[in-house]
Amino acid sequence: MYLYIYDSCLKEKKFENILTKIESRIIDLDIKGEILRMNLLKNVSQFIKDGIKKGAHTVVVIGNDKTFSTVLESAMSENIIMGYIPIDKKSKFAQIFGIPYGELACAILGGRIIEKIDIGKINNKFFLGSIVIDDCQNVELKIDDFKVRVGRGNKIIIKNIDFEEEDSKISNPTDGLFEIFVEKSGGFMSKNSKHTLIKTNNILINSRDTSTPLIFDEIQTINTPAQISIADEKLNIIVGSNRKF
Amino acid sequence: MFKKEMPQNIKNTETVIGESVVLEGEFNSHGNIVLEGKLNGNLSTDGHVLIGDKAEVVANIKAGSAFISGKVIGNITLSDSIDIAKTANIQGDIKASSIAVESGCQINGRVSVGSKIIENPKKTTKQELPLERGE
Image (tube, rainbow over all chains, first blue to last red; front, side):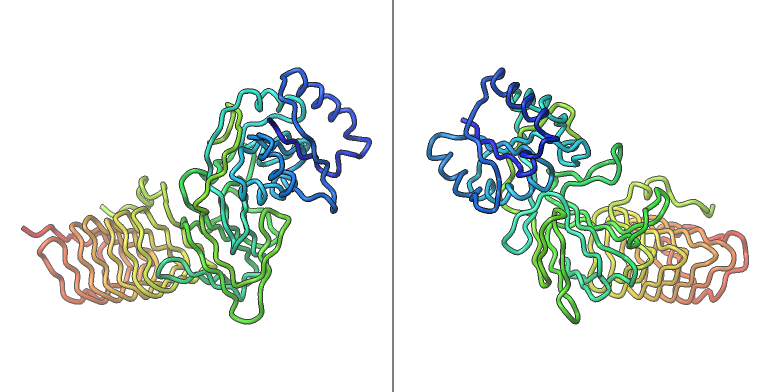
């Protein structure tokens, strides 16, 4: 059985047409299931727990990358397979997983190619994409037996699975490593600019003075100090044959 | 022959330390490293090390091979070759199996190529320092 979690934006009129096509395709492929329409009062974790008790094996997010990241925390806790139907044509996760936009993604669900990929942990929370530290002047990264400090006007990006441009190489989501980049704040990084790249699986981030906010998966914030590691658990995700890894 | 370009194989780099980055401590790796920023501590890798012309390194370096065009205070020990550019300023001993030095660089320390050791070559003047491998 499938569990479908709809982003709250899907109740907007502009998504009516695409949602009708998606639901129609789900019926055609006979991959129906229970539906949860997200809002502040609905508990995603409880919905997944209840679904598993009824025999659910897959939770499918219909929304954008932010929706996916929000559901990720609950799905990882229950060790359930995740699927994704993107309704954002610019979805990075969809491009990485090789999942097309809208109703075309339903065929990927039916194909059930499942990959195990790395998930990052920041303190006790899971993240899939990256962590950004915009104000890194007072931040110190402790990695193995060395420390890294970065000068003013730069930002630090710790990537688990991400890419800069559509055709660029992605951070490998199965190598058990993060990639740490340092680039100029607010500026577009040209292909020729020198940026910092360090690969590691464990990072302790401290601030020398006040606590510094760390933004992960573009939606959540944790303040320093923060311990970042590759989680022991892997994400089981349904991918397409055009995936980038 | 001194190579003005970095070796092709170092372009396939595992680690890059940019100009704005300061690294302190023991940095151990197995891949190629490009260092354009600052390092205080020790650096060790099986691969190649490129020290850029703006880099400031206060560390002992152990690596497969190296291309130095920045400032290094510390001993450099390599299992293979070292290329030293004219902008390099090395204060420490160098051990390598072969060496190529560009005119204008500064080396203050003992240079050991194979079994041959040159005592304190303060400043090179020739285009290619004709160091030969020892027996």
